[in-house]
Image (cartoon, rainbow, N blue to C red; front, side, top):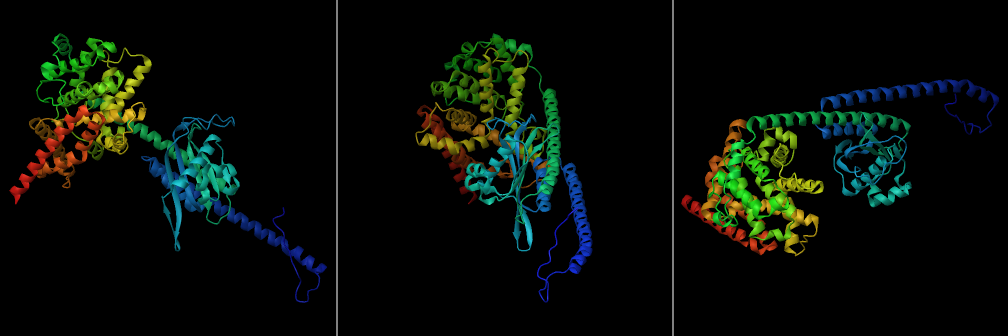
Amino acid sequence: MVVGVAQLINKNPDASTFTKEDQELCNRYLPFCGIAITNAQLFELSQKEFQRNKFLIEMIHDIFEEQTSIGKVVNRIMKRSLKLMKCEHCSVLLLNEPLLDSGDDQLIDRNCENLKFSNSYHLKMASTGRHSVIASEINGELFKALTVLSERVVANPKTLCISDINEDADLKILAGRSCDEIKSILSMPIRNSKSEILGVASLMNKVNNCPFDENDMSFFEAIVLFCGLGINNTMLYDQMAKAKAKQQVALEVLSYHVKCPQVEVERLKLSAIPSVASIDLGSLQFDDFSLDPDQMLTASVRMFLDCGLIEDFNIDYQTLCLWLTTTRKNYRNVIYHNWRHAFNVAQSMFAILTTGNMMQHLSKLECFALLAGCLCHDVDHRGTNNAFQEKTASPLATLYGTSVMEHHHFNHTIMILNTEGHNIFQNLSPSSYRKVISLLRHSILSTDLAINMKYRGTFFPLVENGELDLEDDNHRSMLRAMLMTTCDLCGITKPWKIQREVVNLVASEFIQQGDIEREKFHENNIPAMMDRQKKNELPRMQVQFFDNVGIPLFRICEKVNPLLKPLLDGAIANRNQWEQLQSSSLSAET
């Protein structure tokens, strides 16, 4: 077997021609050269195979050592890949859900709804003097190029190896200037055990400026295979953890809650329903403490009647009474986030829809979802906030991750609706039913103040610039979200005596949580609003809350609808009262 070619050029010192003796000498010498070269090649190959096996064993160890986070698994694999393959960039883009590859060599539709990347990971090898470091930075242009490349691999799920990116005209056009940082690339689809595509892994720019060869492709194929295994195992672990958390939550709920006794349902059915005027139900300055728990039930029925929901959506009266009493039953006896708070939020929504005439801007189905969402928005609240759930690694935090309590309130609401005889939406058409459940979910999740703060940057300028278009679904969605938070905070707009009592209840619940954190975690650095030792700072904290959260929201509501100005006026008046208390407190200290 020929392993190479030897050439002797220009015989020295006399520049004479090569002789037969020279040729014979070469013929004797070259077989030994061939043996040496072959041995060297075999040794190099064995070394590469050894390094490859060592790498794969270490990678298997990484995969099975860390199965709690996809990000950690992927980053460990990428770090090893960068060092061993000696590349400048390594990236992994994961699809939002596994994509089935038919395996019949047909291209997957590029417009497929599933062709969306939900997570991306990127590492870059950077040189600093004689050392190399790995960083995770990625600029927007490079990310665009990686997305285009990954979409191509998913659409045609085979290995993509490009020696010179500039020679691929189509890709250059698609990615534009973002390709400038990429010279060569090796990309492969990541699959799970069912051959479903999970995402795309890519290597870019070998540090020696050489193109990727068959050995690189073979090695990277093994890496991607194990990457798919690690991701799949982590996803299974996550599913098991969530299933366990869901079971714990369900057992906890079942141990605490029971279906409302029929006698309470019958009592509500037989109760006289008060008029709106008799209990001042339509007032934006409604007294939050004027009704007892049973009166709040009959007032809730009145809200559904006066909004025309019972007639328009053919709500069975028995079902409505059962749903209301069971919903009340499923509120825990906590200091503030209890049934009274839920009713007060619903009353605020009712007043905004009727007295504030916001019903003219919303559909009846939206009003139905908003009113029901208010009554359910804090169901099964535990008297602690989202940060507490995350800090204690509660089953709820494991189950939901973000907007923990809001997701739980919605899922608990669905559990009540799915209980026999409780579904107030049961007579809606299939399309209207799907719509109202979506609206209900949006309404409840919108009470997470963190979500509301994100919306403000978009919604406030729309209103201030006169660009709010209620024919636009996104604008309507943000408006409904703002109304939910407005109603959730309406307690700070009420007459001073009522408002101060609301604040005292909220503060007491927060301080109770702070006490638990101090006792359970031995923490001293507790947020001021939850620190019993800083109760005297309540006026200052209230002024900040009014200035940063409450008043800007009520001001924008007044711009949307001038009939909501009483909310802004009430908030400003209460803010000034807290400021006076703050000044008095400071004067007393000096």
